Length: 504
Image 1 (cartoon, helix red, strand yellow):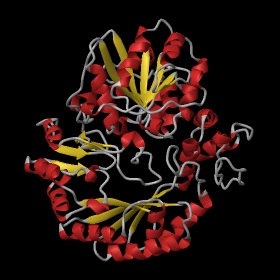
Image 2 (cartoon, one colour):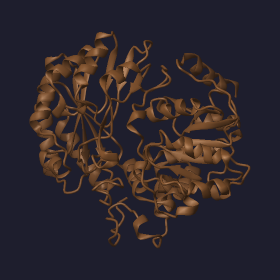
Image 3 (cartoon, one colour):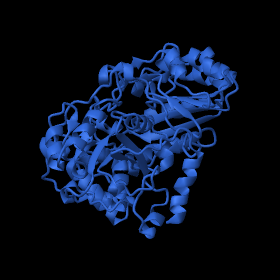
Image 4 (tube, one colour):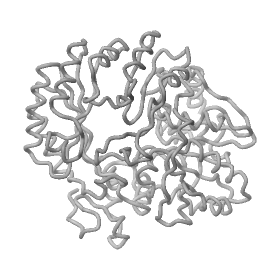
């Protein structure tokens, strides 16, 4: 156990901005993925700072261990980083969940902490489990068996009211009764499967930005800040489209620059549509002129200009990354992805002109109405782009999300997705680097994205069986057919229709 705690202490020594605070109302802020992932989450860091800024309240971080087996073998309880205090000792555990498959990490963290994962198995002596995070914008129903309450949407402000109710209540039941009246809190024991609307933070609370800079993350020593929140575009597959919380909200350039500390030598501008900020080139140039490296998320091909790409290159970019999403122009039109071949070609030309080493393009396969001809168009276009600049394709199977126009669209099926990937690999071999997400795990994500409580309980079975894909498949295929139709999801089904034969 000393080695495991030593790893935590080593991380703390390397952090800049850590808040070590004691307070009467202490919260274990849990991220159900390893430290390197959790500390790359802007929302997680923002809530950490915000809770600690509240008088009489403190937040201490905890993560899924990197070496889960070693932690289990030590028989030591899961502890927080700031205090090395067992997570189970805290009256409230607030967990941020970004992706469907992180539900497995939540179960593993609770078990390491000695807390029964299922809410129905817990007593008043156990912590109150409060969930939030990006998953609440889509479908938090699979979380329902494991949590006491869920803060829906942007919790920048509402988390304080919710924690006030929990700490001010004399029991778990009374806290849940009070929270069930909150307009943006889902209480599974009170609301059934009826989800309240997502919350929207006031614009004057924006932007979210990093509290801690650390070398032990996916984005090494990078200070993150959002120049905008949301998106004004209408891509039909995306949860963060223009109808979500009134689309995109812009943060003024002066405010963005004022919040970046002098110690931050690497700055990441992150958000759903960073390049749609009207001053994005000016922001990047200002940061580069101050001697910093700059990274951007969500580069849109139709927003790439000579000035912006030149600024990115000066800021340390070696690879220009954008997305076409649809394999062909026909598919992009169907999903309302406003990106043309001409714009993607221009992106390649700009990358070459400014000395980038590579163009990386994200693509989805398995979209509704897709055919082999669409894949062939991508092969041909990939060859053309690779003649301009070395090209990498990042390919992911399409997974329909709730609260999007494509909600309920069937999963294409593992055999079909794998066949499309084989066709694509053969077509670009020797000319284009290709990395693809597993069709198997995309199916797991799909079942959870479209599922409910039953699918959530099945995750517990899969985790306890070992967490291999075969365990997930067995757990999902064992679900009863008679559960509610809206929650019945099998590969190839279109929700609300008679189930198709499973393609797994």
